[in-house]
Each structure stands twice: as C-alpha cells, then as structure tokens.
Image 1 (cartoon, rainbow, N blue to C red):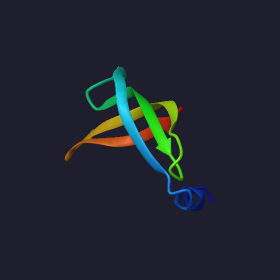
Image 2: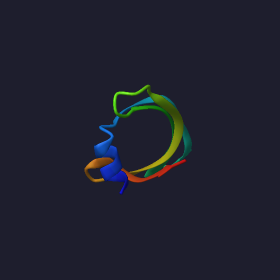
Image 3: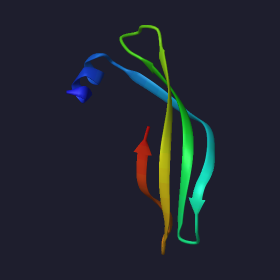
Image 4: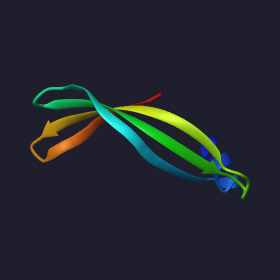
Length: 73
C-alpha cells in the first residue's frame, strides 16, 4: 500500500548525508551512525523535511567491505 500511495502521489525524495561517525569497530566489522536529511515532495506541493538516523553495520569479506545491516531510526 505504501508503494502505490507513493507512485500515485508522484513523490520525489532527495536524501543527503549530513554527518557520520563510528560507533564500534574491530578488524572485521564496523558500526557507523549516519545522519540523514530527507526532503520529500508529492504532487508538486511544498517539500516536507525529515531528519533520520541509520545505524549501518559493515563487515569485511574476501571481496571487500559490504553492508550487513541497516537500522533506521
């Protein structure tokens, strides 16, 4: 239902990273807190602004660092 409402509203979202920092790290895993500013415009109306946070967990693999988990808040 959310997807269809978004499509029907012709919503456009622009998200920018405004800050980040390491919460915990070791040789094979890093957790970083990422601060995001999100601007959404629907049906040509005025934009709405939302500040979000994401806790991103990265793990080291043979192919390099990969995202293992993202928790938004």
